[in-house]
Length: 406
Image 1 (cartoon, rainbow, N blue to C red):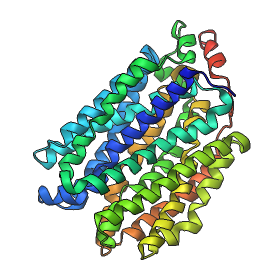
Image 2 (cartoon, rainbow, N blue to C red; image 1 turned 30 degrees about the vertical axis):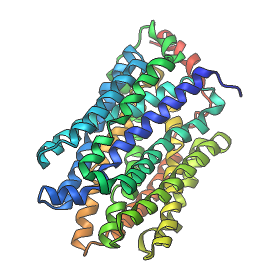
Image 3 (cartoon, one colour; image 1 turned 45 degrees about the vertical axis):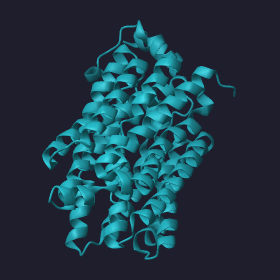
Image 4 (tube, one colour; image 1 turned 180 degrees about the vertical axis):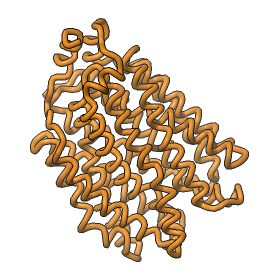
């Protein structure tokens, strides 16, 4: 199916928006040890900043989602990207741990807005038959950001230190200029803009069972991703005592696996359905667990990390399209992002929980990560069987009926 230039530009902007958002988030996971040393505290205390960032993301999803549902996806996306870039820069200027914790909380609000707004804009714009692949591409933005952070850590950390890592994180602000110049508003939003629409609370009440189910599902998904990613560099540094260069190479390998998984299962969901693709991808994690968490050499750990992220991000690659397809039309910029980030809130205890469990068992980060990953892989496989399947629904046509339905 042929694409218009506008459809390509929207996809590029949304992919880069999530990539650079994740880049700014993951820069921190490489330097927990260094921040703890400078502020004379322990790693779990600094890891609490990750918990705060994740916990504040639902507020961002709600604020920016409502703005996007009211004023449009495009202007909201520009404001959102500018906000998270500025807060990343300010994080590098933190004089103490308390200031850093406050700034990472505010960063969480900005980070929480991007995914829902960007995915709604894209899914409402691209051809329906392309949604599965584009979903995988969008979600691949997350490991792409982690990959970018891995490269920056491996190449520049020794020269710029942990503060310099945050200063580099202001770069995404340039994306605002691209969105302003090249990205149009979504057709579905234009179709809905002039029509009377029910409010958020009324719509959620009408869809309360779907909302509760989606939040529980996304809680499991967030434990799956954050439970296998956030403390992995610390696992490599603290438990295996690898140098920054080796940590960088293993993390790069991990993220290549994640990108491959997201693209493959996103595209596959177009053929076999969203639910079946998620079911298969999540269960791949189980046979991979021993290699991923309990190997000793860098090559074996890299292979395990590669395969684990094919599973994790393979399942995740279907989520942008699946949540947008099952979402009520009138709150599509709010609903997917909000349930995703509320899941994040419930899973935000993960980094602190895993770090504390590892420290209490002689720094056994592998065990702490394996317990979480194995459990939630099974939970996701069971939960997804209860989901709706709305592959290929016409979002613009559906949006035109919103006014008539109210």
